Length: 260
Image 1: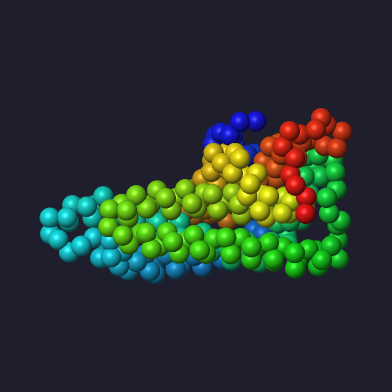
Image 2: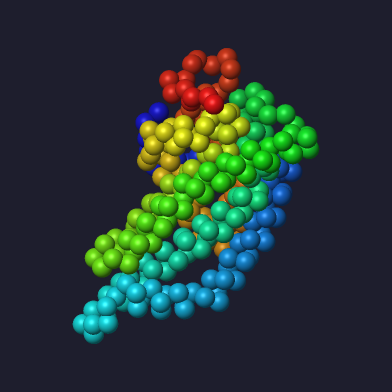
């Protein structure tokens, strides 16, 4: 299957449509409650600090030259997008860190429905065993994310380069969303973090298409509360159809992940 951003976006929409299924509802509840609490906090923070941050960024990005004032009207929506992406992605990191074991369970249940195979045991004992592994994967994502976001922050304050940084921030955010959510089904299948990145890079446009729609959904009030479980389900569909294949009796997939 060739890389296609619309295909990637379609995986997320299909994940969203699967949420009401009776077999998935109980696995969606805890991630949903975590999202309600954390994104409620993100909305409060944006309401309180948005104008302050916009003003600070305007002063940092534009020199105090009167003839450049017209650029403020052009930069305002781009800076607003940067703030929204950074705040919501930061809160999503925290939400995913807390919900990681439950998201892993949700991904396992979806894969079982799609492929008819069991990739993890059920029950609280399995959840307890999954917690340290899930947290280590979240730390690996954080280790990947932090150096890159710091570099982007530095570039955002360099004249001329900073004019294109809002677009760079958006693409980077979409890529990180793909990494964040595709990791759950791949981790369940013992695909290493480095191998997961290689698989996503091989079909980068599909990954960015998936992550872009997730990112847009995170910016929509109320809708963003169900983005996490929808993205986990969509990423599992993505994993099954792009890499794993429909089941153990299906023809061998041409792209086989490397196991740990």
